[in-house]
Length: 95
Length: 481
Image 1 (cartoon, each protein chain N blue to C red):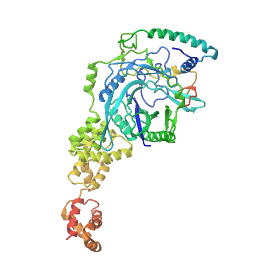
Image 2: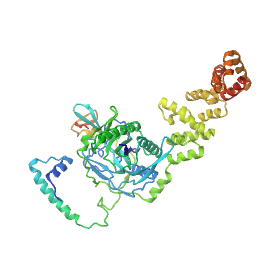
Image 3: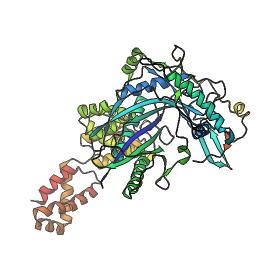
Image 4: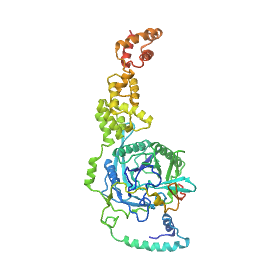
């Protein structure tokens, strides 16, 4: 499977990563080598093997529907860069 | 060319749990910003989700109520996207192995018929927070109280052809989930939000056209209008020889139009993968059967029982069965007076009108089922005409005592004494000789209309209390003599 600098740019934008123009080819090459390793793994015959969603052979423990967390706004917002009237402020996002 | 609309619906249903799906923070509408958002909801480093057992139970209850296959093993996945109201950078959802598989649902239509639709799946996921775009200069405010609210996303097959069917489905779904008690179904507060996938195809074709998705429509009326304008927009494009772009659109109720949501389109690649912070949920047969045994009577079977047992019309039965408290009220009234048809008429007529007027629900109704039954008994035994009954009903609504008390206090008893009525008729005939001559000269067909004048005069003289059937019989007898 060959990967192009355009694919890398797309993946980077989805992950909100900034890759400088002059580093793009290098990242593409290294990314490609990782995918070669994946290709090798794909050779394994997995017929009849269920996909593994978690390495632990356990099931999820469930929590009772009881309120255990009360208001912690002041404490949690003390580390936020900007807050106003109880809201977290972020750079404007428009739909 | 004639076009056919094809639609599938996705409903996001907020579950009525006390706490979030993955944290112990409160799940209540209307709190001050960020006072119900804990470190898990905020996606703080090192925080781990723990699944709420009630959310799982509600999802299974829903699955059982639509005869769906329950996922004995279901798995959470990460749906990756960046938006500030989802602080982890992903939403925990179920993509590959949902908790509820294929099911089916029968929908009652307003004309009394029913039609079946197929449910593709329903899965658990977390809601996002809310963004406030216009209150802060140049910035967006984020409230994460809603982040982590348990959602059941219910997806249908593309089985809808008309807006009317889509609305009927949403109403039936609303009725089902509120009867189950798994959601408050409050659309105005966003407890039930609908995405509409809509495409057009040439009538007779069985291939699907390119669809658009209209996001987050939050009232029955808007669903109907959004479908109307989006279908029209697609028809215009197709008839001009254009192509539909597959995209997400927003319904703007103020301008009654749909608009492209470009910002969410750029990154339409969610790169789902299994959520490593959560283990699979395993549900066994005993759990499922225990839940099945405790399900309440559902609107569908209840509707059928009302038709069979109380001889109601399909329409009345569907309306009464659609709301658990309304159905219980109807059964209490009927148990107390034995007059199912009259009870249905009064509950769906005057009582519902009064509830709407005061904007309250049946559970806040000031008239108890026993009080309404008391009124209905007096109608059934001809003590009250329908006009007087309305007057008594107003008294019941205002808390003036029982139907008996009001009839006595206001002297509302219907006059069914033929001697008294005959005296009134004689008087009116004597006082209006010209109308009598006119009546006698008229042919059979016109006489009925002319007799209305006399009925009106006598009703006026009796203050509306004359028994209308008896009056009519006696009057015609005297006039025709």
